[in-house]
Length: 146
Image (cartoon, rainbow, N blue to C red; front, side, top):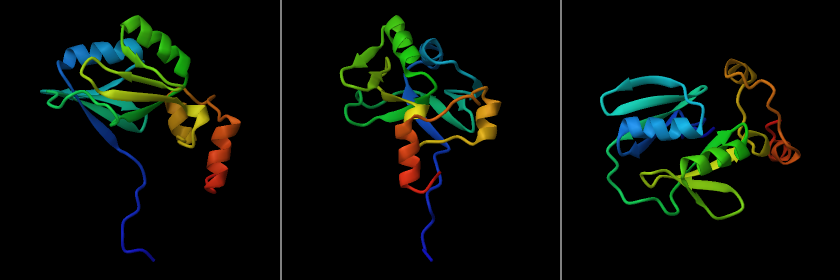
């Protein structure tokens, strides 16, 4: 028996941006957004059973190695939207970009990774037809998660 708590998941990420309305417009041009709520200087965007908190007032320089990853249903649709938005897409084999405030975001496709949403959550998000690639299934099986 362990005496430490086990990590279960991430509830939310707080992302510092410049102007909140501009951030909602930018991210809304790239992704389909559902606004969970808003308070002064913060907006909360749903990701099914998780969320991103956009916090007005970026104070640090642009991200280099530090980044966070978002899981999407279709990475290539994100690439097209980023190009249309004039975002800084970073070179490499994946899909990484910087938002207008310097946040480094990595985009991965649901099917290709071990990250898994509960079937009820996917159904509620209208994504119940998402499946896993062979590589995604292999990652899950290697950890005994499938």
